[in-house]
Image 1 (cartoon, helix red, strand yellow):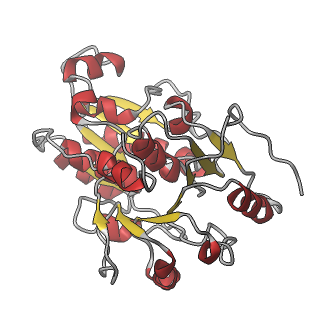
Image 2 (cartoon, rainbow, N blue to C red):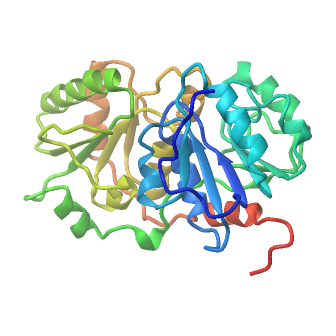
Length: 326
């Protein structure tokens, strides 16, 4: 079996909590960072990820192990889960693993097992339903539609920051480089470089066609263009933003709605995630012409007060190992 080195320093002890956060983008590791930063420091954590540069975990200084998404992925994951002996195993979105590699392992594990649910496409739901009996607890990071027929703990939304950790509007606009009293439009892309290369030029052009004077900021992993904003996490800057444009992923959707920022979503087709469902009752655009029209409307839309209740700490309480009293 091909060796996959630890990205961070080796743990001094076996993990108390093993968080499976493998997936195609930063959504899983962002949710992991949001939850795990609330745990007691005496709890030993190990996050398993297939994202080569998991910025949220690095930023929050959380121990993780990178598993390359190659031909050795399944055997490596099985080896780690079987031999790390955690007291709590948390599976994020994929109850049996990204490639169902833990189908034989999950039922046999004697530790506490927790499943975190985020809405998925209809063709993947039978896999979740069949695996739920193997889990001791289910955390809802998003409303289950249709409802899951098991006991669950509602913890939506799970965000990376609390209200008091957000920047003031003035501080946020200063970081964004706004030098005049103009609206700020923030375009947010993902780890998909091809989509970023298509999306950002379309957004620039649509915004220019509105004829409205604005400040444009663009955010994507590794993006270094002149409008680039590299502050992390972006959630801290939302009080200084007037319109957000991006796909309909879990984190961006719940962050902008929690902060009351007008948003235009461009839902993208995904293998598992259901962005069309998530954004069905919001402002969306499916063409450059629609985006231009929606931008005109959004730039005139009022903000709602920022006053959200982040459920990340509640999810962290669910993860506390059996018998732990702090």
